[in-house]
Structures are given as structure tokens and as C-alpha cells.
Image 1 (cartoon, rainbow, N blue to C red):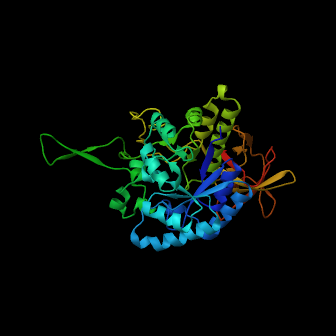
Image 2 (image 1 turned 180 degrees about the vertical axis):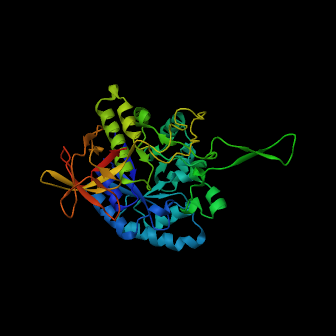
Length: 409
């Protein structure tokens, strides 16, 4: 059995390096103006650096051109697809049939990956895309495991299947949504979603005996989060996903921090590797414990186990983690000390956790000393106040450039 690919998001070249460091086999990223995460697109220079770096270490890069394109967009699409062909990208993620035709003409040797935005939920549709040049289908997130198994059994043998395993879920059908366009004039189908499903809404009902009189419906003082979904988490389902023959497991989050990427990718990497080594004793508890340290919303398996599941709404509107936060990133190790770039306030006495690639248990230690970078004098606290704020401390473990540190609040 070919090992399942772990596919991670890369909202920048630096995030791509973090993703590969923590175990991603491939990354996916956006193109200028033409993907569905316009705030995390890479320019051509960063795309080239990401692709060259990935290929130098035997990894892959998939690039999204997955907007639903208007006619006036096609000149830009032709230009971008030609550039991706020149750069040697491994796959282009696409939703629109017209864009598929452009890829076949301007990047004929590049794999075509059909985006989840295309709402593929049957093997009949898989065959349609395969007959039109697709190498991979990213299935709609509305499917359950029995439906996925049925698709895999009936698809062409050389057609790859990719599913989402972790991350945010759109309220709309596979993310095809007009809510943001209607409320904010920002189209999610053109890469500029305002995430309207995460807003608090006031809901009113009309009194039966008093037409025209509206009574508010509220859950608490924050309002009612009627569209906000929990985050998908299929760490418990890794054995089933692998055994049913899924080719690629995808993590969502091009807008997420390097800390989020390190934790989530490392958790899924170690889980997948541990299952292949010892499938009889797979236990997701330790991986879930790590994932809980990054979560900003509740976690759900969505429809994977049960098409009738209703437990996937996050009515709290929660957007933070009460226990852990991004501490910093290793810049350099020298003598017995480490230079780190901080992301939040650090003080002597704080408890930190070093996330080690390939190991699920972090290295836990306390800050006993901090040294100012410029004066080398001991200090008690350092605050993020300027760009790339750095500090020196001791870490009781070998470190490498780019490793991520979390802080226990």
C-alpha cells in the first residue's frame, strides 16, 4: 500500500518551510488574485522559491487557481497558468471547467486537481473530471465514510482521491457561498470571503398572536452564532482513512500561524507514521491532546461517521485558546543559548513547550533566564513591540532553526 500523502497549507514561503519541517509531504498555496484565500496568496517570487525549495527536498507543491472565473479574468488565468507551467508546479487546483481547459492548453504536463469547491460527491462526477483530464479529486466535505469508500471502489485506478482531515468548515455547500458577497460585497467565490458565517447575528421571531411584533432570540450577551461551524478533526479516524485507500489527507489553514501549522502537521504526521508502524495499537488520545492546544473552536467529525450528525455548530463564537499561545520561533542556537523570535510576551518563570518535529510529546521547560539581544544583560520580561522582536534564553534540548515554541498561559 502506498503511504497516504499529508498535504498542508502554505500561506507564505516561510510557512511552507515550517510545514515541510514538521512532516508535510506536500503543500498547497494560492496564486495572486486567483485562489480562494486572497489574503494568503504568494507572489511569483515566493511561489518560485517555494517550488524550488520543495523539489530540492523531494516534496511537492500544489497551487490553487480555484476561483469561479468571469470572462474578464481569463487573460490573467492564462498568464498565471503559463507561469506555473514554467515553474514546474506539481498540481493545479481548479474548480471551474473553463479553467481546466486553460490548464490543458497552457500547462499540458501539470496535474489537474479538482477543488472541493467543485462539489464532487459521486464516482460518476469523478469519472467526468477524469475524462476531462483530472489526476486528482478533492472530494466535497459533505460525504460520509461509506460514500467515500464507494467512490474509491468505483473510480478509475489512476485517479487520486484527496479529502480534508482537519480545519475550518464553511457553512455553505463545500464552501460555495454568496453570503459574504451579499452582506459585505466581498465574494468568497473570488477569494475575498469576509467569513460572514463567523459573525454574531441577532435573530427575531414574529409573535403568533401579534403580527409585526418581533421578539429577539438570543443565546447570551454575545448574540447568536447561527452559522459558525466547529472545526473538522479526523485524527481518530486515521486508520479508516488509510485503509479505505484515500491518497491524500489535507489540512486546512493558509491563514493560520506557524505555531498552528507546526502543532497540527506534527500531530497528523506522527499519527500516520505510528499507525503504519503499529496499526493494532493505534490510539489517538495523545495526538488529540496536542491538537487541543491549538483549537480555537470546538472539534467535530462533521459527516464522516454519520450523515445525520448535528453536532457541528459552534454557538459560542470562540476565537482563541484559553490555555496556550504562540511563544516564538528558533532563529539560532549558539553556545548553550538559543536566539528566538517572539510572538507573545515572555517572562522569567513562564512554562514553554518546544515542538520537536517527528515527536508527539513536546519538551516542557521553564524560563530561568532571559537576555536582551542588544545588551546581553539579563531581563525579566520581553514584549512584542517591534518587528521581529528577539530574545535569548536557554532550552534544555537541541534545537534547529525554525522550530516552534508554545507558551502556557
